[in-house]
Image (cartoon, rainbow, N blue to C red; front, top):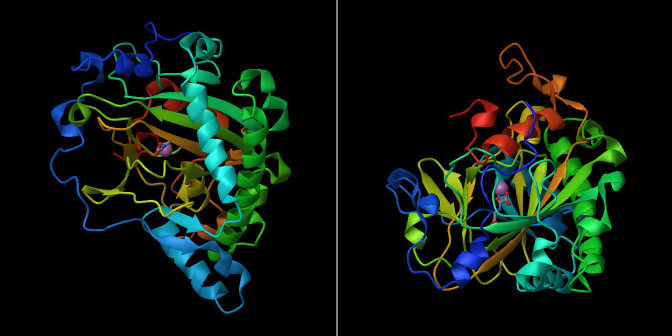
Length: 352
Ligand code: OGA
Ligand code: NI
């Protein structure tokens, strides 16, 4: 299976549609009734995802309870938000704001970075290459930070001026956090503390950023900003928009609407950690709803295994009672699925 070199249909920027002042959205953004935001059983009885003070892992009195809290979140909901994570709050705000500025530049400036399905790098407006697919109400920008040989500043926006520097600084922080959490998860899984980091390729991990731009939508009840999906990579660090909710996380038949604490970072387990943990940890489905009053900007940083390593359940977590649930596969092979089919729930893990 190979990705085609180009999109199957001409690309329309959702932001341009939104700014054109239409009051009816085009047919190709209208979801079938059962997939709309307010279809039956949308609210969960769980009010929010867990909030964890990550500083607790460095405090002798709190370490154990903090590890337990993280362990429970990884096993159950697959999502949690962290505070006291060490990323400076001003840096978080600047990272979001430089991207907001990017999206508010004239279209010609952005079009210079228009992406294609071969690498997805650059300015994009769809995921997947199925002709005639129903599309999501969002534009995005995708770039690589690690491995170093994929970091190409020419593929990062040159404007606004501060963007490359601010995003480099933010990226360093995310990679540091990735290392911390892989260690915590290894310990919690009863593995050696560097097990997951080694399984991810040691210093050769991947880190790539998708910045999501969700324009205002005149008919938010008919569409989604991002369709239900699980993240294909290792784990994701999401910098949400502080003022505008939108992210919803699967909980049974319903959805939890995430209410982020100020300057928190949302962490979620991706498919590769579900595989390595032999499904002890869950990569949970999530989606984004939009609204008619405010645009929303989020930074989803994907922390991934080196793309050509075989990923398979840790042998310590495979027992006669719990055989290996997944075959060995490289992340390169794995992500072709979402890159061709687009977001399709958790079907890539064989779950419906
Ligand atoms: C993603 C994602 C959520 C959001 O980019 O994979 O799930 O809130 N984003 O934008
Ligand atoms: Ni996601």
